[in-house]
Amino acid sequence: MTTPTFCTDCGHELGIGRFCTNCGRPVPGRHPEATPTVSAPAAPSAASSPQPRSAPVVPPSADQVPPSARYPMYADAPPTVTAPTTPTTPTTWPQPTPPPVPVLAPSYPAAPKDPRPWLPWVIALVVLALVAALGAFLLLGGDDGEQAADDSRDDRSQSGDPSGEGSEPGAPEQPDATGTGAPVDAPDPDDIEDLTSDVTATVPSIAQPSRDRKGKPVRFVVANMWDGRPRTAWRMAGDGTGETLTFDLGEEVVITDVGMINGYAKVDGPINWYRSNRRVRAVQWEFDDGTRITQEFGDKQAMQMAAIGPVTTQTIKVHLLTVTAPGKTDGRDFTAISEVRFLGATAD
Image (cartoon, rainbow, N blue to C red; front, side):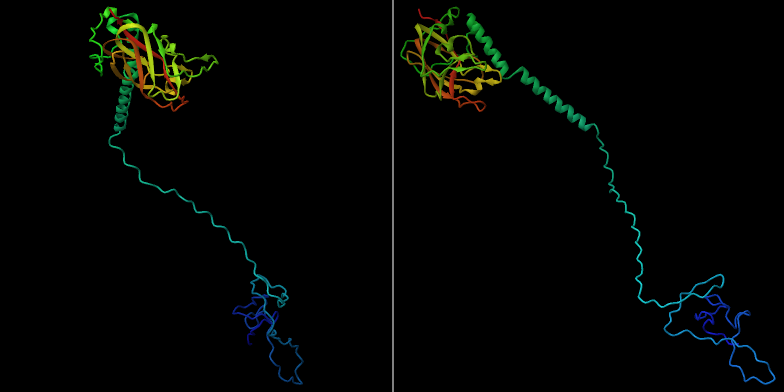
């Protein structure tokens, strides 16, 4: 018996097994239970009885698409195979999203340890010591100490103490002009006194009255320069450079010391009028015999005195040589003098 190439039931192309891989039917010639394929019979004889013949195997048409192979456990009915009319679009399944790749922080090698961990502490201690020394210097010295010395000298001068005549340390300044009068002997220290309280003065001009922070009127008359109150002052508008003030002592006296508070020495709340107004930096004291003494002033709110050689005079002229500009903070364009002082004795 010849083995067919196609299944006699479903027409699927046969492989090498004993069953059809499509419908599971036994393959004739390979399986004993398969129906044998009948070849063309010979002409029957008269003596033999007719035998039934199986239907001829019809191969599938060439345009028929065979079904996909399947491997059943048992034989089942042959499936109906139809050719697809339109091509099907294969289904594209979503691809899984790959998990994010973790980003690791870069690692750096550890810094080497400082072999001298105590060095920063030593530097800090040295800096603290320098700051402490500077603070002690500023507290114990500087302008505050100088102002306290000036105030103490002023108190001794007012009380008539001959050891504190208001003179600067060292030898008295000698007159820078010969003068026309005869030499004068220095008065006895016990006779030296403050001669300022009885003077009168002539000034270039007087500024208009003002008001303080409480609304009270403030006047800048000439008598403010010898009232013993540094918070009051004579004041003129503008720059007083080149102007002259004349003081009359009322009688002839021997002058030994002169001085002044060279600005408006008043602090009114947050406002320091000494810094706001113009300040006198240098003057020339002129006496009746033509003697002239030049004095320069520091920038401090205190009486600054200058010792001179004894000079006999009744009037004292004060020529303003140098005056500062108005202060940068709350500046006022006024030239001011809070106090003047003349020490000496009555002429014999």
